[in-house]
Length: 409
Image 1 (cartoon, one colour):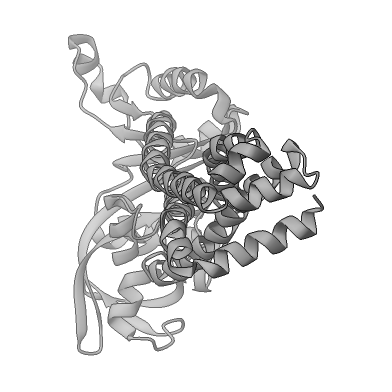
Image 2 (cartoon, one colour):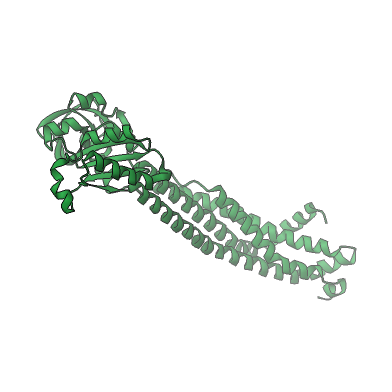
């Protein structure tokens, strides 16, 4: 039987039993919609998570913080160390190819005010290397420069949220704000870091605060030449363990063999967290796909039942066709085409429903909820396979009937 004739007969049969065919399609439609939506949802969540982690800028970053000596030897020799200083960061970069950049950081809690608006925020004093270490950019203006640090200039880069709260959409660059009891010129507004799904406390305080030159911080808000924290960016994230050991040895020597610091391998913690997240997301993908696949299996049961009913109703037609020369493969092909055609229609309708659902759910994601091509492929292949398997037994049963059996039925 030609495929065109098989399709014509299939469409005629479906149209003749519209309600029955519609109820049969319901399971396939629901299953396809569920598979496409769930897999697309998982993929969108993965994109949100990875983009959020990337924007935090913590890949390859190690924190070196000032700490009190603990051993008796270090306590006795503590006076030989000048503690963490801006010079430590410069020496680390100059002394090793393993360090891409390093930034000294100091903090202070200050009130930032403009006009009638004011907020108590975390003020960060640092160098231009901070932007390199954390891969920070600005939405407006510029970041602090080496010239600002050398001249102890009173310039500030406002965090993304702080600029919104103070200026309420107006241009902040070029304005003067009061930080503590001092006036600062706003030279830039930092970009947004992270997203609604991934946003740690550090980045949020950064976006809600302001950044000024480290030397300005030390001159106006105290703290002396020492800094509480230094961030180090690895040149190669494949050798974080080696860099950790190198930093510990190098800083120990710079501090006259006094261990008055602590190193936190944040980059390694991020890698481990990413592996855990990846395993968890893959597990959820399997679970949600399995749950969604149940609907497709139910749809397959519906197709099986309909073909069994159709077989009972069309025994005379089968017997007549066989009596005038139709072969077993013609009858088999006819019923398989009907099963697969029902699956394809159901998959197409399910895809359209999934598009609507994803468009509605996309408003809750910053990057929207795009339809996953892999999810569509998976759903369509699964739907067709379910239809094919469901229609195999009724098709074989119909094809093996003799003309006498069919006409007698």
